[in-house]
Amino acid sequence: MKSVVGSSFGLARQWLTESAEAWSRFWFTPCSPRVISVLRILAGAMLVYSHLVWAMDLGSFLGPDAWIDNDTAKSLHDGSFGFSDAARSYLWNIDSMGLLWAHHVVAILIAIAFTLGFLTRLSGPLSLFLQLMLLHRLTGMLFGLDQILTYCLMYLSIGPSGACYSVDAWLRRRLTGDRLAWLFPADRPSVSANVATRLLQIHLCVIYFFGGIAKARGTTWWDGSAMWLSAANYEYQSVPLTWIVDYPRLGALLSNATMLWELSYVALIWPRLTRPVFLVIAVMVHAGIGIFLGMITFGTMMIIANLIFVSPKLFSCQSCEA
Amino acid sequence: MSSRKVQAAEERIPEPSMPTRPLGKWQWVISLGILFHLVAVVLPPLAYQSDGPAGISPVIQAATTPVRPYGEFLHLNRGYAFFAPDPGPSHLFQIARLDEENFPFEEWMYPSLDHQWPRLAYHRHFMLAEYLNRIHRPVDLPEGLDPSIIVDLKAERRRYEYVRRSMIEKMRKELSHDNIALRRIEHALLLPQDYSSGIPINDRRTYQVLGDGPVFSEPALSEEVPTPQDAGANETITDPKVPS
Image (cartoon, rainbow over all chains, first blue to last red):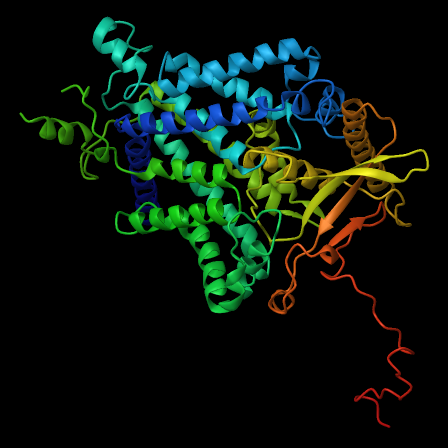
Protein backbone atom coordinates (compact mmCIF):
# COMPACT_ATOMS: atom_id res chain seq x y z
CA MET A 1 0.00 0.00 0.00
CA LYS A 2 2.80 2.42 0.99
CA SER A 3 4.62 1.72 -2.28
CA VAL A 4 1.44 2.43 -4.29
CA VAL A 5 0.91 5.76 -2.52
CA GLY A 6 4.58 6.57 -2.85
CA SER A 7 4.56 5.72 -6.57
CA SER A 8 1.48 7.86 -7.12
CA PHE A 9 3.09 10.82 -5.42
CA GLY A 10 6.21 10.25 -7.45
CA LEU A 11 4.23 10.16 -10.70
CA ALA A 12 2.31 13.29 -9.75
CA ARG A 13 5.52 15.09 -8.89
CA GLN A 14 7.09 14.02 -12.16
CA TRP A 15 4.00 15.19 -14.05
CA LEU A 16 4.12 18.57 -12.32
CA THR A 17 7.82 18.96 -13.08
CA GLU A 18 7.37 18.06 -16.74
CA SER A 19 4.36 20.38 -16.98
CA ALA A 20 6.36 23.25 -15.56
CA GLU A 21 9.18 22.54 -18.02
CA ALA A 22 6.72 22.40 -20.93
CA TRP A 23 5.16 25.68 -19.77
CA SER A 24 8.62 27.22 -19.51
CA ARG A 25 9.57 26.06 -23.01
CA PHE A 26 6.27 27.28 -24.49
CA TRP A 27 6.32 30.75 -22.94
CA PHE A 28 9.95 31.57 -22.11
CA THR A 29 11.94 30.34 -25.10
CA PRO A 30 13.31 33.42 -26.86
CA CYS A 31 11.79 34.01 -30.27
CA SER A 32 12.60 36.29 -33.18
CA PRO A 33 10.70 39.59 -33.31
CA ARG A 34 10.43 39.56 -37.11
CA VAL A 35 6.89 38.22 -37.37
CA ILE A 36 5.49 40.68 -34.85
CA SER A 37 7.39 43.46 -36.62
CA VAL A 38 5.67 42.58 -39.88
CA LEU A 39 2.33 42.43 -38.05
CA ARG A 40 3.02 45.86 -36.61
CA ILE A 41 3.19 47.39 -40.08
CA LEU A 42 0.06 45.63 -41.35
CA ALA A 43 -2.07 46.08 -38.22
CA GLY A 44 -0.87 49.65 -37.86
CA ALA A 45 -1.88 50.43 -41.43
CA MET A 46 -5.34 48.96 -40.79
CA LEU A 47 -5.64 51.06 -37.64
CA VAL A 48 -4.75 54.21 -39.56
CA TYR A 49 -7.36 53.32 -42.21
CA SER A 50 -10.01 52.69 -39.55
CA HIS A 51 -9.29 56.07 -37.95
CA LEU A 52 -9.45 57.78 -41.35
CA VAL A 53 -12.87 56.29 -42.08
CA TRP A 54 -14.19 57.55 -38.72
CA ALA A 55 -12.74 60.94 -39.65
CA MET A 56 -14.69 61.08 -42.91
CA ASP A 57 -17.83 61.77 -40.87
CA LEU A 58 -16.53 62.29 -37.36
CA GLY A 59 -19.52 64.27 -36.14
CA SER A 60 -21.84 61.37 -36.93
CA PHE A 61 -19.84 59.02 -34.74
CA LEU A 62 -18.47 61.19 -31.93
CA GLY A 63 -19.72 64.16 -30.02
CA PRO A 64 -23.11 65.51 -28.95
CA ASP A 65 -24.75 65.19 -32.39
CA ALA A 66 -23.62 61.66 -33.21
CA TRP A 67 -25.96 58.83 -34.09
CA ILE A 68 -25.55 57.75 -30.46
CA ASP A 69 -24.86 61.00 -28.63
CA ASN A 70 -22.45 61.35 -25.72
CA ASP A 71 -25.06 61.09 -22.98
CA THR A 72 -26.69 58.01 -24.47
CA ALA A 73 -23.33 56.35 -25.12
CA LYS A 74 -22.35 56.93 -21.50
CA SER A 75 -25.67 55.59 -20.28
CA LEU A 76 -25.08 52.34 -22.16
CA HIS A 77 -22.21 51.59 -19.79
CA ASP A 78 -22.81 53.39 -16.50
CA GLY A 79 -25.78 51.44 -15.21
CA SER A 80 -28.50 53.84 -16.33
CA PHE A 81 -30.26 51.04 -18.16
CA GLY A 82 -29.32 48.33 -15.70
CA PHE A 83 -26.01 47.51 -17.39
CA SER A 84 -22.80 48.74 -15.89
CA ASP A 85 -19.38 47.75 -17.11
CA ALA A 86 -15.77 48.86 -17.11
CA ALA A 87 -15.77 49.93 -20.77
CA ARG A 88 -15.46 53.62 -19.92
CA SER A 89 -14.30 56.45 -22.16
CA TYR A 90 -13.41 60.07 -21.56
CA LEU A 91 -14.82 60.75 -25.02
CA TRP A 92 -18.30 60.67 -23.48
CA ASN A 93 -17.47 63.94 -21.77
CA ILE A 94 -16.10 65.84 -24.76
CA ASP A 95 -18.78 67.90 -26.51
CA SER A 96 -16.44 70.21 -28.39
CA MET A 97 -16.00 69.08 -31.98
CA GLY A 98 -12.77 71.07 -32.11
CA LEU A 99 -11.34 69.07 -29.24
CA LEU A 100 -12.63 65.81 -30.71
CA TRP A 101 -10.98 66.61 -34.01
CA ALA A 102 -7.69 67.43 -32.29
CA HIS A 103 -7.95 64.17 -30.34
CA HIS A 104 -8.62 62.22 -33.49
CA VAL A 105 -5.76 63.77 -35.42
CA VAL A 106 -3.44 62.86 -32.54
CA ALA A 107 -4.79 59.30 -32.62
CA ILE A 108 -4.08 59.09 -36.35
CA LEU A 109 -0.54 60.46 -35.93
CA ILE A 110 0.23 58.01 -33.14
CA ALA A 111 -1.14 55.16 -35.27
CA ILE A 112 1.12 56.27 -38.13
CA ALA A 113 4.08 56.37 -35.75
CA PHE A 114 3.27 52.85 -34.61
CA THR A 115 2.95 51.63 -38.21
CA LEU A 116 6.31 53.11 -39.12
CA GLY A 117 7.83 51.75 -35.94
CA PHE A 118 8.76 55.07 -34.39
CA LEU A 119 9.11 54.97 -30.60
CA THR A 120 7.13 51.76 -30.85
CA ARG A 121 7.41 51.01 -27.13
CA LEU A 122 5.34 54.16 -26.57
CA SER A 123 3.27 54.49 -29.73
CA GLY A 124 2.04 50.89 -29.42
CA PRO A 125 0.46 51.12 -25.97
CA LEU A 126 -0.80 54.63 -26.77
CA SER A 127 -2.44 53.39 -29.97
CA LEU A 128 -4.09 50.61 -27.97
CA PHE A 129 -5.35 53.00 -25.30
CA LEU A 130 -6.79 55.46 -27.82
CA GLN A 131 -8.38 52.58 -29.73
CA LEU A 132 -10.05 51.34 -26.54
CA MET A 133 -11.36 54.82 -25.75
CA LEU A 134 -12.87 54.93 -29.24
CA LEU A 135 -14.38 51.47 -28.97
CA HIS A 136 -15.99 52.22 -25.60
CA ARG A 137 -17.52 55.38 -27.07
CA LEU A 138 -18.66 53.76 -30.32
CA THR A 139 -20.88 51.04 -28.89
CA GLY A 140 -23.29 49.84 -31.54
CA MET A 141 -21.06 50.47 -34.54
CA LEU A 142 -18.38 47.87 -33.99
CA PHE A 143 -17.76 44.43 -35.44
CA GLY A 144 -15.12 41.75 -35.81
CA LEU A 145 -12.55 44.07 -37.34
CA ASP A 146 -12.40 46.15 -34.16
CA GLN A 147 -11.95 43.05 -32.02
CA ILE A 148 -9.09 41.46 -33.92
CA LEU A 149 -7.39 44.81 -34.56
CA THR A 150 -7.48 45.66 -30.86
CA TYR A 151 -6.14 42.27 -29.84
CA CYS A 152 -3.26 42.56 -32.32
CA LEU A 153 -2.43 46.01 -30.95
CA MET A 154 -2.52 44.60 -27.42
CA TYR A 155 -0.05 41.82 -28.07
CA LEU A 156 2.17 43.85 -30.40
CA SER A 157 2.52 46.37 -27.56
CA ILE A 158 3.86 43.65 -25.28
CA GLY A 159 6.57 42.43 -27.62
CA PRO A 160 9.41 44.35 -29.31
CA SER A 161 7.43 44.86 -32.51
CA GLY A 162 9.63 47.84 -33.39
CA ALA A 163 12.82 45.77 -33.50
CA CYS A 164 12.70 45.25 -37.29
CA TYR A 165 11.48 47.06 -40.38
CA SER A 166 11.09 50.23 -38.39
CA VAL A 167 12.31 53.74 -37.76
CA ASP A 168 13.41 52.47 -34.34
CA ALA A 169 15.68 49.88 -35.98
CA TRP A 170 17.20 52.62 -38.16
CA LEU A 171 17.71 54.88 -35.14
CA ARG A 172 19.31 52.02 -33.25
CA ARG A 173 21.77 51.31 -36.06
CA ARG A 174 22.60 54.99 -36.67
CA LEU A 175 22.38 56.63 -33.29
CA THR A 176 21.76 54.72 -30.12
CA GLY A 177 23.38 51.30 -30.51
CA ASP A 178 22.83 49.38 -27.30
CA ARG A 179 21.90 52.47 -25.32
CA LEU A 180 18.21 52.85 -24.48
CA ALA A 181 17.85 49.16 -25.35
CA TRP A 182 14.28 48.96 -24.05
CA LEU A 183 13.14 51.91 -26.18
CA PHE A 184 15.01 50.72 -29.27
CA PRO A 185 15.00 46.90 -29.04
CA ALA A 186 17.43 44.87 -31.07
CA ASP A 187 16.53 42.34 -33.70
CA ARG A 188 17.42 39.44 -31.44
CA PRO A 189 15.29 36.58 -30.10
CA SER A 190 13.64 37.59 -26.87
CA VAL A 191 11.19 36.21 -24.33
CA SER A 192 8.86 39.20 -24.72
CA ALA A 193 8.61 38.53 -28.47
CA ASN A 194 7.72 34.95 -27.66
CA VAL A 195 5.10 35.89 -25.06
CA ALA A 196 3.46 38.32 -27.49
CA THR A 197 3.50 35.67 -30.22
CA ARG A 198 2.03 32.96 -28.02
CA LEU A 199 -0.71 35.18 -26.64
CA LEU A 200 -1.93 36.13 -30.11
CA GLN A 201 -1.70 32.51 -31.27
CA ILE A 202 -3.81 31.30 -28.35
CA HIS A 203 -6.30 34.14 -28.71
CA LEU A 204 -6.81 33.23 -32.37
CA CYS A 205 -7.42 29.63 -31.33
CA VAL A 206 -10.04 30.82 -28.83
CA ILE A 207 -11.77 32.96 -31.47
CA TYR A 208 -11.98 30.15 -33.99
CA PHE A 209 -12.94 27.49 -31.45
CA PHE A 210 -15.86 29.44 -30.05
CA GLY A 211 -16.80 30.62 -33.55
CA GLY A 212 -17.06 26.95 -34.49
CA ILE A 213 -18.94 26.04 -31.33
CA ALA A 214 -21.46 28.80 -32.00
CA LYS A 215 -21.99 27.54 -35.55
CA ALA A 216 -22.29 23.95 -34.37
CA ARG A 217 -25.21 24.95 -32.17
CA GLY A 218 -27.16 26.04 -35.21
CA THR A 219 -28.62 23.89 -37.96
CA THR A 220 -27.62 25.51 -41.24
CA TRP A 221 -23.87 24.98 -40.86
CA TRP A 222 -24.69 21.26 -40.49
CA ASP A 223 -27.36 20.93 -43.19
CA GLY A 224 -25.23 22.94 -45.60
CA SER A 225 -27.58 25.86 -46.20
CA ALA A 226 -25.47 28.41 -44.32
CA MET A 227 -23.43 29.31 -47.37
CA TRP A 228 -26.59 30.10 -49.38
CA LEU A 229 -28.01 32.17 -46.52
CA SER A 230 -24.77 34.15 -46.36
CA ALA A 231 -24.74 34.62 -50.14
CA ALA A 232 -28.40 35.66 -50.18
CA ASN A 233 -27.83 38.50 -47.75
CA TYR A 234 -28.01 41.61 -49.95
CA GLU A 235 -26.63 43.97 -47.33
CA TYR A 236 -23.46 41.91 -46.97
CA GLN A 237 -23.06 41.14 -50.66
CA SER A 238 -20.16 42.69 -52.57
CA VAL A 239 -19.23 40.29 -55.36
CA PRO A 240 -22.31 38.08 -55.90
CA LEU A 241 -22.07 34.55 -54.58
CA THR A 242 -25.70 33.71 -55.38
CA TRP A 243 -24.60 31.44 -58.25
CA ILE A 244 -23.91 28.91 -55.50
CA VAL A 245 -27.65 28.15 -55.52
CA ASP A 246 -26.98 26.00 -58.60
CA TYR A 247 -24.30 24.03 -56.75
CA PRO A 248 -25.94 22.85 -53.51
CA ARG A 249 -23.24 20.26 -52.82
CA LEU A 250 -20.54 22.92 -53.08
CA GLY A 251 -22.51 25.16 -50.75
CA ALA A 252 -22.93 22.31 -48.28
CA LEU A 253 -19.25 21.39 -48.50
CA LEU A 254 -18.20 24.98 -47.81
CA SER A 255 -20.66 25.26 -44.92
CA ASN A 256 -19.51 22.06 -43.24
CA ALA A 257 -15.83 22.70 -43.95
CA THR A 258 -15.94 26.21 -42.50
CA MET A 259 -17.47 25.00 -39.26
CA LEU A 260 -15.18 21.99 -38.92
CA TRP A 261 -12.10 24.05 -39.78
CA GLU A 262 -12.98 26.54 -37.03
CA LEU A 263 -13.60 23.80 -34.50
CA SER A 264 -10.36 21.96 -35.26
CA TYR A 265 -8.12 25.03 -35.67
CA VAL A 266 -7.24 25.02 -31.97
CA ALA A 267 -5.70 21.54 -32.28
CA LEU A 268 -4.42 21.34 -35.84
CA ILE A 269 -2.80 24.76 -36.28
CA TRP A 270 0.08 23.68 -34.04
CA PRO A 271 1.53 20.52 -35.72
CA ARG A 272 4.01 21.25 -38.52
CA LEU A 273 2.20 18.93 -40.96
CA THR A 274 -1.24 20.50 -40.62
CA ARG A 275 -0.27 24.12 -39.98
CA PRO A 276 0.31 25.08 -43.65
CA VAL A 277 -3.01 23.49 -44.62
CA PHE A 278 -4.91 25.39 -41.94
CA LEU A 279 -3.22 28.65 -42.84
CA VAL A 280 -4.12 28.20 -46.50
CA ILE A 281 -7.73 27.52 -45.49
CA ALA A 282 -7.65 30.64 -43.29
CA VAL A 283 -6.60 32.73 -46.28
CA MET A 284 -9.35 31.18 -48.41
CA VAL A 285 -12.08 31.65 -45.77
CA HIS A 286 -11.17 35.24 -45.01
CA ALA A 287 -10.50 36.15 -48.61
CA GLY A 288 -13.97 34.79 -49.33
CA ILE A 289 -15.46 36.91 -46.57
CA GLY A 290 -13.71 39.95 -47.94
CA ILE A 291 -14.55 39.36 -51.60
CA PHE A 292 -18.11 38.04 -51.34
CA LEU A 293 -19.45 39.41 -48.05
CA GLY A 294 -18.10 42.92 -48.29
CA MET A 295 -16.02 42.76 -45.12
CA ILE A 296 -12.73 43.48 -46.84
CA THR A 297 -11.17 45.02 -43.74
CA PHE A 298 -12.22 42.21 -41.43
CA GLY A 299 -11.12 39.50 -43.87
CA THR A 300 -7.79 41.22 -44.39
CA MET A 301 -7.20 41.69 -40.67
CA MET A 302 -7.90 38.04 -39.92
CA ILE A 303 -5.40 36.99 -42.61
CA ILE A 304 -2.89 39.39 -41.06
CA ALA A 305 -3.49 37.91 -37.60
CA ASN A 306 -2.93 34.38 -38.93
CA LEU A 307 0.59 35.43 -39.95
CA ILE A 308 1.46 34.96 -36.28
CA PHE A 309 1.76 31.25 -37.07
CA VAL A 310 4.26 31.82 -39.87
CA SER A 311 7.90 31.05 -39.16
CA PRO A 312 10.15 34.08 -38.66
CA LYS A 313 12.64 32.38 -40.99
CA LEU A 314 10.47 33.52 -43.90
CA PHE A 315 11.30 37.13 -43.15
CA SER A 316 14.84 38.33 -43.75
CA CYS A 317 16.19 41.42 -42.10
CA GLN A 318 19.24 43.19 -43.42
CA SER A 319 19.78 44.77 -40.07
CA CYS A 320 19.84 41.42 -38.23
CA GLU A 321 22.61 41.28 -35.70
CA ALA A 322 24.91 38.26 -35.39
CA MET B 1 30.12 31.78 -39.69
CA SER B 2 27.61 32.62 -42.43
CA SER B 3 24.68 34.84 -41.55
CA ARG B 4 22.33 31.95 -42.35
CA LYS B 5 23.96 29.74 -39.77
CA VAL B 6 23.89 32.57 -37.26
CA GLN B 7 20.20 33.03 -38.02
CA ALA B 8 19.49 29.33 -37.60
CA ALA B 9 21.44 29.22 -34.36
CA GLU B 10 19.53 32.17 -32.97
CA GLU B 11 16.14 30.73 -33.80
CA ARG B 12 16.71 27.16 -32.74
CA ILE B 13 14.10 25.99 -30.31
CA PRO B 14 15.52 23.76 -27.57
CA GLU B 15 14.74 20.07 -28.05
CA PRO B 16 12.16 18.68 -25.59
CA SER B 17 14.85 16.50 -24.04
CA MET B 18 17.05 19.51 -23.31
CA PRO B 19 16.96 20.19 -19.58
CA THR B 20 15.37 23.53 -18.71
CA ARG B 21 15.89 25.66 -15.65
CA PRO B 22 13.04 25.81 -13.15
CA LEU B 23 10.90 28.93 -13.35
CA GLY B 24 12.54 31.95 -11.79
CA LYS B 25 10.72 34.51 -9.63
CA TRP B 26 9.91 36.84 -12.55
CA GLN B 27 8.80 33.94 -14.69
CA TRP B 28 6.35 32.95 -11.95
CA VAL B 29 4.97 36.49 -11.88
CA ILE B 30 4.68 36.64 -15.66
CA SER B 31 3.08 33.19 -15.71
CA LEU B 32 0.41 34.31 -13.25
CA GLY B 33 -0.26 37.36 -15.41
CA ILE B 34 -0.51 35.17 -18.49
CA LEU B 35 -2.94 32.83 -16.75
CA PHE B 36 -5.11 35.73 -15.58
CA HIS B 37 -5.22 37.16 -19.10
CA LEU B 38 -6.03 33.80 -20.69
CA VAL B 39 -8.89 33.30 -18.25
CA ALA B 40 -10.20 36.73 -19.29
CA VAL B 41 -9.89 35.67 -22.93
CA VAL B 42 -11.60 32.28 -22.61
CA LEU B 43 -14.42 32.94 -20.15
CA PRO B 44 -16.46 35.58 -22.05
CA PRO B 45 -17.16 33.40 -25.11
CA LEU B 46 -17.74 30.48 -22.77
CA ALA B 47 -20.27 32.56 -20.84
CA TYR B 48 -21.91 33.57 -24.11
CA GLN B 49 -22.37 29.92 -25.03
CA SER B 50 -23.56 28.98 -21.56
CA ASP B 51 -26.40 31.54 -21.64
CA GLY B 52 -29.61 29.56 -21.72
CA PRO B 53 -33.26 29.80 -20.64
CA ALA B 54 -32.15 29.61 -17.02
CA GLY B 55 -29.51 32.29 -17.51
CA ILE B 56 -25.75 31.92 -17.63
CA SER B 57 -24.20 28.89 -15.96
CA PRO B 58 -23.65 29.93 -12.31
CA VAL B 59 -20.19 28.37 -12.18
CA ILE B 60 -19.07 30.28 -15.28
CA GLN B 61 -20.72 33.42 -13.94
CA ALA B 62 -18.76 33.06 -10.70
CA ALA B 63 -15.51 32.33 -12.53
CA THR B 64 -15.98 35.39 -14.76
CA THR B 65 -16.50 37.83 -11.89
CA PRO B 66 -12.82 38.42 -10.97
CA VAL B 67 -11.77 39.08 -14.59
CA ARG B 68 -14.89 40.89 -15.80
CA PRO B 69 -13.71 44.51 -15.39
CA TYR B 70 -10.34 43.65 -16.94
CA GLY B 71 -12.03 41.91 -19.88
CA GLU B 72 -14.58 44.69 -20.37
CA PHE B 73 -11.93 47.37 -20.44
CA LEU B 74 -9.78 45.48 -22.97
CA HIS B 75 -12.79 44.63 -25.18
CA LEU B 76 -12.30 40.93 -24.45
CA ASN B 77 -15.96 40.40 -23.50
CA ARG B 78 -16.97 39.01 -26.90
CA GLY B 79 -18.78 35.86 -28.00
CA TYR B 80 -17.13 35.43 -31.44
CA ALA B 81 -20.42 34.03 -32.79
CA PHE B 82 -19.89 35.30 -36.34
CA PHE B 83 -22.83 34.32 -38.59
CA ALA B 84 -23.79 31.96 -35.81
CA PRO B 85 -25.69 29.95 -34.78
CA ASP B 86 -27.17 30.52 -38.26
CA PRO B 87 -26.89 33.34 -40.79
CA GLY B 88 -30.02 35.41 -40.46
CA PRO B 89 -31.84 38.29 -42.10
CA SER B 90 -30.18 41.68 -42.11
CA HIS B 91 -31.62 44.80 -40.56
CA LEU B 92 -31.72 48.37 -41.72
CA PHE B 93 -33.26 51.58 -40.53
CA GLN B 94 -35.04 54.19 -42.58
CA ILE B 95 -35.17 57.88 -41.82
CA ALA B 96 -38.00 59.96 -43.26
CA ARG B 97 -38.64 63.69 -43.29
CA LEU B 98 -42.35 64.22 -42.70
CA ASP B 99 -44.58 67.09 -43.70
CA GLU B 100 -47.29 68.69 -41.51
CA GLU B 101 -49.61 65.82 -42.24
CA ASN B 102 -46.92 63.32 -41.19
CA PHE B 103 -46.49 62.19 -44.76
CA PRO B 104 -42.90 61.26 -45.70
CA PHE B 105 -41.56 63.37 -48.52
CA GLU B 106 -37.90 62.40 -48.29
CA GLU B 107 -36.39 59.12 -47.14
CA TRP B 108 -32.96 57.63 -46.56
CA MET B 109 -32.07 54.03 -45.97
CA TYR B 110 -29.20 52.97 -43.75
CA PRO B 111 -27.02 51.26 -44.69
CA SER B 112 -26.88 52.30 -48.30
CA LEU B 113 -24.01 51.95 -50.72
CA ASP B 114 -25.37 55.01 -52.52
CA HIS B 115 -24.68 57.27 -49.55
CA GLN B 116 -22.00 55.62 -47.44
CA TRP B 117 -18.50 55.16 -48.78
CA PRO B 118 -16.04 53.52 -48.44
CA ARG B 119 -17.27 50.06 -47.59
CA LEU B 120 -16.11 50.35 -44.00
CA ALA B 121 -18.27 53.45 -43.51
CA TYR B 122 -21.21 51.54 -45.00
CA HIS B 123 -20.50 48.69 -42.61
CA ARG B 124 -20.46 51.01 -39.59
CA HIS B 125 -24.00 52.12 -40.45
CA PHE B 126 -24.95 48.50 -41.06
CA MET B 127 -23.75 47.58 -37.56
CA LEU B 128 -25.72 50.51 -36.14
CA ALA B 129 -28.88 49.18 -37.78
CA GLU B 130 -28.20 45.70 -36.45
CA TYR B 131 -27.55 47.11 -32.99
CA LEU B 132 -30.82 49.05 -33.00
CA ASN B 133 -32.67 45.88 -33.89
CA ARG B 134 -30.80 43.81 -31.32
CA ILE B 135 -31.64 46.13 -28.44
CA HIS B 136 -35.28 46.52 -29.45
CA ARG B 137 -37.74 45.45 -26.78
CA PRO B 138 -41.52 45.66 -27.25
CA VAL B 139 -43.56 48.24 -25.43
CA ASP B 140 -46.16 45.79 -24.22
CA LEU B 141 -44.85 42.93 -22.14
CA PRO B 142 -46.53 39.54 -21.93
CA GLU B 143 -48.52 38.90 -18.80
CA GLY B 144 -47.38 36.58 -16.07
CA LEU B 145 -43.70 37.45 -16.20
CA ASP B 146 -41.53 37.36 -13.12
CA PRO B 147 -41.29 40.91 -11.63
CA SER B 148 -37.49 40.89 -11.84
CA ILE B 149 -37.68 40.07 -15.55
CA ILE B 150 -40.20 42.90 -16.04
CA VAL B 151 -37.75 45.31 -14.41
CA ASP B 152 -34.97 44.16 -16.73
CA LEU B 153 -37.15 44.33 -19.85
CA LYS B 154 -38.33 47.82 -18.96
CA ALA B 155 -34.73 48.95 -18.52
CA GLU B 156 -33.84 47.42 -21.86
CA ARG B 157 -36.83 49.14 -23.46
CA ARG B 158 -35.63 52.46 -22.08
CA ARG B 159 -32.21 51.79 -23.58
CA TYR B 160 -33.80 51.22 -26.99
CA GLU B 161 -35.90 54.36 -26.70
CA TYR B 162 -32.88 56.50 -25.75
CA VAL B 163 -30.79 55.20 -28.63
CA ARG B 164 -33.67 55.67 -31.06
CA ARG B 165 -34.32 59.18 -29.80
CA SER B 166 -30.63 60.02 -30.15
CA MET B 167 -30.67 58.90 -33.78
CA ILE B 168 -33.81 60.92 -34.56
CA GLU B 169 -32.34 63.96 -32.81
CA LYS B 170 -29.19 63.70 -34.90
CA MET B 171 -31.22 63.80 -38.10
CA ARG B 172 -33.36 66.68 -36.80
CA LYS B 173 -30.23 68.78 -36.36
CA GLU B 174 -28.63 67.62 -39.58
CA LEU B 175 -31.72 68.29 -41.70
CA SER B 176 -32.89 71.30 -39.70
CA HIS B 177 -36.30 69.71 -39.64
CA ASP B 178 -38.31 68.76 -36.60
CA ASN B 179 -40.65 66.15 -38.00
CA ILE B 180 -38.43 63.11 -38.47
CA ALA B 181 -39.49 59.46 -38.37
CA LEU B 182 -37.33 56.39 -37.95
CA ARG B 183 -38.39 52.84 -38.59
CA ARG B 184 -36.62 49.50 -38.44
CA ILE B 185 -36.65 47.26 -41.44
CA GLU B 186 -35.84 43.59 -41.76
CA HIS B 187 -34.56 42.22 -45.03
CA ALA B 188 -35.56 38.58 -45.11
CA LEU B 189 -33.53 35.95 -46.91
CA LEU B 190 -34.87 34.18 -49.96
CA LEU B 191 -35.14 30.44 -50.11
CA PRO B 192 -33.00 28.88 -52.85
CA GLN B 193 -36.08 27.88 -54.84
CA ASP B 194 -37.45 31.43 -54.72
CA TYR B 195 -34.18 32.82 -56.05
CA SER B 196 -34.00 30.12 -58.72
CA SER B 197 -37.51 31.08 -59.86
CA GLY B 198 -36.17 34.53 -60.76
CA ILE B 199 -36.84 36.65 -57.71
CA PRO B 200 -33.86 38.90 -56.95
CA ILE B 201 -32.50 38.98 -53.41
CA ASN B 202 -33.33 42.67 -53.14
CA ASP B 203 -36.94 42.23 -54.25
CA ARG B 204 -39.17 44.82 -52.56
CA ARG B 205 -41.30 42.10 -51.01
CA THR B 206 -38.33 40.88 -48.98
CA TYR B 207 -38.15 44.17 -47.04
CA GLN B 208 -40.54 44.30 -44.08
CA VAL B 209 -41.15 47.14 -41.69
CA LEU B 210 -40.75 46.01 -38.10
CA GLY B 211 -43.32 47.40 -35.75
CA ASP B 212 -42.88 48.04 -32.10
CA GLY B 213 -44.52 44.81 -31.06
CA PRO B 214 -42.95 41.43 -30.38
CA VAL B 215 -40.17 40.66 -32.83
CA PHE B 216 -40.40 37.68 -35.11
CA SER B 217 -39.31 37.11 -38.67
CA GLU B 218 -41.98 36.98 -41.33
CA PRO B 219 -41.68 34.60 -44.31
CA ALA B 220 -39.28 35.85 -46.94
CA LEU B 221 -42.01 36.86 -49.37
CA SER B 222 -44.94 38.74 -47.94
CA GLU B 223 -47.85 37.92 -50.21
CA GLU B 224 -51.51 37.52 -49.48
CA VAL B 225 -52.51 34.05 -48.44
CA PRO B 226 -55.90 33.13 -50.03
CA THR B 227 -58.68 32.45 -47.55
CA PRO B 228 -60.21 28.98 -47.57
CA GLN B 229 -63.30 30.47 -49.37
CA ASP B 230 -61.13 31.92 -52.13
CA ALA B 231 -59.41 28.61 -52.60
CA GLY B 232 -62.86 27.05 -53.05
CA ALA B 233 -62.18 24.61 -50.25
CA ASN B 234 -65.78 23.57 -49.75
CA GLU B 235 -64.67 19.99 -49.73
CA THR B 236 -64.24 18.23 -46.45
CA ILE B 237 -60.68 17.75 -45.46
CA THR B 238 -60.25 14.39 -43.83
CA ASP B 239 -57.58 13.82 -41.26
CA PRO B 240 -56.02 10.57 -42.50
CA LYS B 241 -55.58 9.49 -38.91
CA VAL B 242 -59.26 9.87 -38.08
CA PRO B 243 -61.41 6.96 -39.26
CA SER B 244 -64.16 8.19 -41.58
